[in-house]
Image (cartoon, rainbow, N blue to C red):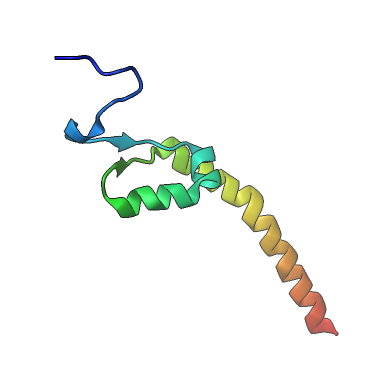
Length: 79
């Protein structure tokens, strides 16, 4: 058999192919991850460490925004 060039790997003959995204892949390439999941050709695995880091990001980004919104709404109610 002839050997294929390096980089031309044939994923079709593998029984399973796993994609394990990190936090930056989940935040920066969400649309790509969604397409991979919808295609049902690859198995997406998200480790607990990534989930925990995403939870920490949520607390740092979303909660301050919500606190600002709540304060704004309270100020508007006083008017």
